[in-house]
Length: 360
Length: 122
Image: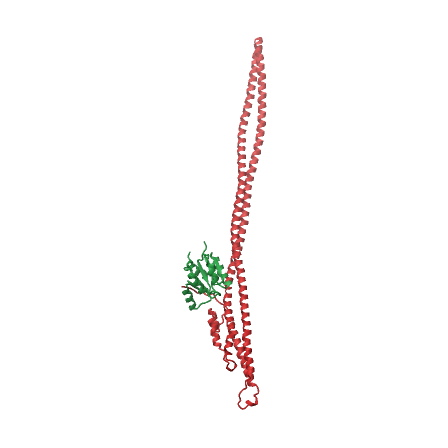
């Protein structure tokens, strides 16, 4: 049985019960001797008056208190549900804003950091590559210089050979000068000077050869060093490239993992938001309950009016309580199908959403 | 630019539910607590659609619709009645006043959005 019907039945029950009890008590009282023959109960008008006044008092004082309690409950519920919906609405808005900001920040951060890191590291690799290429150019130039050294060595050997030849010629000239006797004495001096010069040339040639050999050794040593350095640089560049790719790969893994976590969080947040929105829909019950309570409260507030009607003509002419009228008046305040059903005694614990939309 | 919808209901919880539903679909929402309050909210605003309760204090929904239809700027603005009332007589009153649709509470968000999208101009 619904709240409104319970209250009305309670009130009418109380009244009819009270009146019945009063009549029964009066009927069962011992009859005064003067009325013994007529067998008619004696009515104590003073008591009836007191009873009627007590009912009036009941209607005037109790029913407003009932109605006030219902109204208080209604207002308290309205306030609490209003606060709750506002809080839930705030939560969904915060979730929306967090979801948007988190998603855009992660995407932005991910792209920015990855792109900046990649670009910076590629610049480092590029610089190393440039240095390596320059070293390779130096290496090629040093290699080409070793060819000149070989030429210089040949030239030095040629100088020594020419000096030997010249010495031999000078020696022959000295012999021929000696054979010529006094006539050849001057020529012998020239031949001797030529021999000395050839000897000097031969020694200079050897010195050139020795110096060229020293240069050759120095160049080979430098070449070996440059080759080693180039090889090391090449290895370092390759290694750096590998390391950079590994670092970028790790960074990518971290970002992917972050993105996955973020997506999971985002899905959870969306799910929570959906649940909250679904819950908010259920809060519409407050509006429905509030209306039912208002109708019941209004009906209770009208109760003194009905009591006033039955007592209007005084205790000599008491009227019966018009329950049908009261029920009809209550029924006329209903706005919901569920109220009409409840009026007929049908109780439905849940109120399903209506799919009803009427377009005009 | 987002369309603006005015929701008129004396129940804060219903206003919140409608507001969240509409904001989630990208609409701007303003609220009125009864017909009288809603009429004052219409001044200086461009409202593309109105959703109104029927039973409200100060000015009920049917009277509010009639008052809105008297306003030059809003005489063609579509109005949806969102109410617990499901009686045919009340619906006819709403229709006669100028409402375009009648949605019975409690409503489902998808149902409300469907009604809104059918009435609001893109």
